Length: 291
Image (cartoon, rainbow, N blue to C red; front, side, top):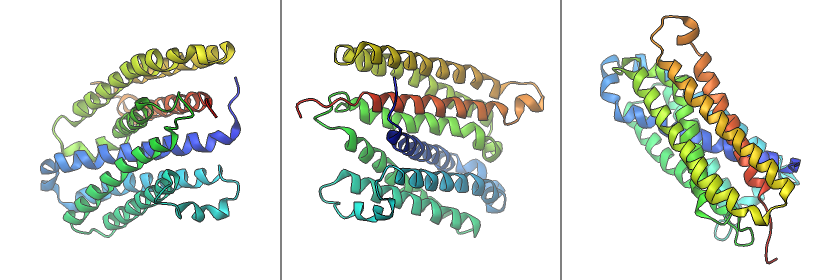
């Protein structure tokens, strides 16, 4: 089974873009909810800890936008894709992605210069709305009547689940440094991650395989179906490994190896690889009918 190389920019763009949205919602959503635990430390303590995650998300979103250009025949003419906002979901996607990137840029600048917390919360709230809209718009691009495997609620649901899963995977890497003032933060962040991984495993088993891939068995060539089934099993294995690794984040030992960045980085890497494989399977299900 071979994947057309021209699809890789779309795979990377959609997964990275949704990962940034999910990470942003988790990080700044929890800050808004548990801000009372952090107020006692003041902005001088909080802002430096916010700057690095905000800058990381900004750079990742910028990278995803650059990668998306690789799929265009003439990247220099990318701006022309925005002219059909009334009729084109692609134009709306580009606009929403650019708005989300601009919001991240504004937020990063506001953190760097120490703007009032009320402004940061306002920007974050608007950014969450734009991010959620961006994922919905992304899903609408692929819900084509001529492609039965894509034209399903599973497409929209899977895109939002990518944001949820990668966002939770991002938390242990950056959240612990920020939420050290939040009582029992290590345990609670681990619980959030594990619940999200468990939900993802259930979704992968019930919707992605039973109601998704296996329901399309008669429409897919046997050799291709066999390859996709093996990749689906690999996704399941990667999520289980991430789930097991998640327990070590709350490991009570004092070892720098256990309490450092190894496990959070490993979990995020497993999640990202699993989602990239899942998106590759999604693009391999492209089969036009009735055209």
